Amino acid sequence: MPPRTSRSAAVPRGAARSGTTTATPTRADASSTASRADPARAAQHHPRNLTPITPVLDREFADPDVVVVDGVYHAYATNVAGLNVQHATSTDLVHWTIDEKDVLPVVGAWVRPDPPHDVWAPEVFDNGDGFTLQYTARDRAGGRQCIGAAVAPSPEGPFRPVGGSSLVCPTEAGGAIDASSYTENGTRHLLWKSDGNCCGLDTWLHIQPVSWDGTRVTGEAVRLLKQDRDWEGGLVEAPTLVKRDGRYVLLYSAGDYRTGDYATGWAVSDTLTGPYVKGHEPLLTTRSFAGAIGGPGGQDVVTGPDGRDRILFHGRGADPSRRALYVADIGFADGRPVVRGSRTSYEAELARVHRAAVRDAENAWGGRAVGHIDEPDSFVEFRLYAASSGTHALTIRYGNGSLDAAGAPAAATHTLTVGGADAGVVHYPYTGWDAWQQREVPVELREGWNTIRLSKGDRHTELDAVQVA
Image (cartoon, rainbow, N blue to C red):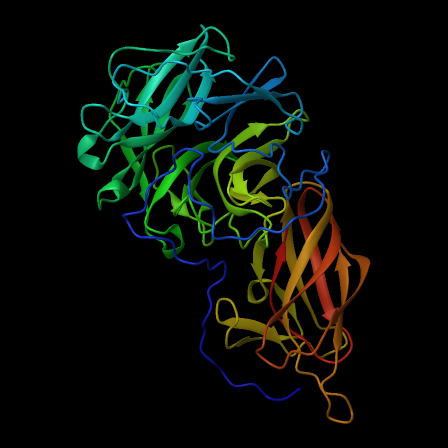
């Protein structure tokens, strides 16, 4: 191989296009502008190993929230076609039946009286004596979006408003949207977003104690995090909190919901009220789904029929004018969420490198790559996490500048092993050095941690990173 010289970094891992600024509107009804993404048609959904390429509910069903009652999953979504809150049911999270009636036929007296009421982002939970629905609508007094509550004896509704005022409505902060519930040690907490992007203010995600039925606040709100990453496009919203592996994992959406820049991020904390540390890259993006799903967001996490976690979210598929419902397996790798079907990146320079060299590399993610994989026993070994067992797509970001004996560009190879077992040979077309391209191969992974090794094959190939979906 030719000698190498140090070069400066350029592209960060997991980079996504910047969205809009603080003037970006938040989510609204089904008449929203179509995504700029052009998601491709893709393979049929498999109900056993959930790979979210085709929607499980192929209609406008944005901002999904799910509660399970006696083995039946009840999903609720943002307003559409004259319904304030949509409702659908399923027993397996794959096959859904639409409820044609409005489960919130009447909104609270605090809501602006002129229809449409723009009710969205519903949150429903069992309150012990029935069910509570928290929802976002526009306040008649201040004109801001605020959060209200309604109750019903069953998850099918109809839900009736509680009290004459909203539950949370910080007018000075731009209002409040996107209610989400979290319980711990006998206390219910409300998570919500201050809607500051309406008026040039920061958007904060908050947590606040509320009564067990979720109809009144019982303590002060605590700020958890705000927008501070380029990919977030000027706002964060739609908080969802779970606790896994002893850590609090906060999922959230960010960016302009009308576009393919909308995405889902994550942050972790050792305590309920933080501080929360954001992941180095978003969890779900148009790019992480290779364009098959545009603008994934509005997520919720629920336990599936087999006792394993699922994530539900909306996204734009073959018809980019609507936000359909998707379901995927989700796992937590020491607190880091991993979603099946969405690419998770692993840098080569952070892997186990044997008889090879990490070097500065132009245009490599993170500015470094692994080269000189030249000796018979040279290899790079990655430790990867799979949300569920089965066939996964392994995408290898590589550079091959090999020449044959006549000095002509030549293909190269690596041998591939998974969990120590032979998994074949990876073939790399010629690219030139530092001209990084991607090669995708199928691999069989088990749920949890897996070891993948790429070893010296024919000629020479450098490795920048791998991604698993």
